[in-house]
Amino acid sequence: MNKLAILAFALLLFLSTMLWYLANGSLNDYLKSQVLLQSQYYSGQQSQLLSTDFSSNTGLTSFTGFSLTNIDGLTQPQLMTADKIIVQLAKVPTTEFDSPSIEKRTTSLVHVSEIRFSNLRVWSETMKSGQSNLDVLIKEVNTKLATDYPALYPHMSAELYAKKHPERSETLALEALDSRPEPQKIEINQAIIASKKAKQKKRLLGKAQTRIKISAVFIDELTLTVINNNNVITKRFHNVELGSIGNKDGLVSNQLGGELLRLLLQKLNTLAQASGS
Image 1: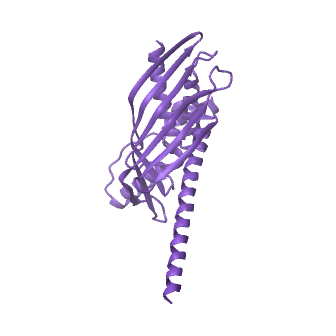
Image 2: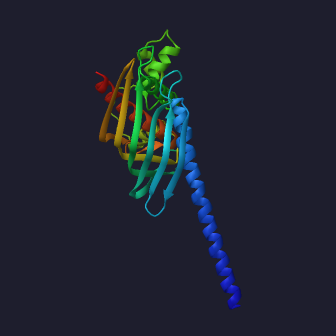
Image 3: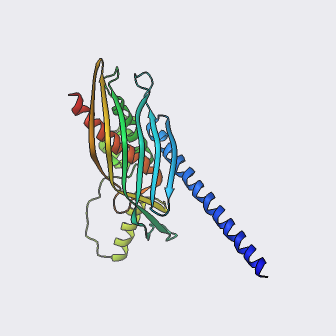
């Protein structure tokens, strides 16, 4: 019996180890696929990522060898490359709050303390239209975000709506999107007040049961090359701060990639314009 017990314990330990290994591998594959899918979806450009490694002990994820291809017809094959992107979970990585739904489900909020880009290289190039490749990609990302989450980007959504319906002004488009604040009136019924707040929160947050917020985004080392006709300027920056992403309620995971890319491109474009002037 003792021998059988030892054998059973050994098998259990082996199977547990294998399940942990397979789960850990699946998580790495999932995280890698999300980076590739979201960066390609929001930018419209192909992306590559060599590897992903998540450590459950430290709460740290390392993305190695990220690159985003440039717009066709430009001199550089890549728009940006990063040796590593480090994502650090907060000491308390998850919290729960009531989801604004009829089912009264609980939403999990994942808290990322910081994201750091290591050795980021970017090429900003002026196109024949006079726009830069960064300008074009920012517009692409903004359009996707406003289309998918109109309630969260009311002015961008109204602009898109007005373009599709030229007979309507942007003011009317905002009304159609129901994004203007309604005239305030005094309400004393607490049940009605709570119901209206829940409906507004549901409209803004949607039905997602997992949301993410990021406290800080940094670029440790940035090499920025600005190309304008035959004029090429290369500048280096260190410890570039990009700010935070998501408020206390965070963002849905599918929106996160677009917001991170938008924040990154806007900062790079600001630096590129200052460097090229």
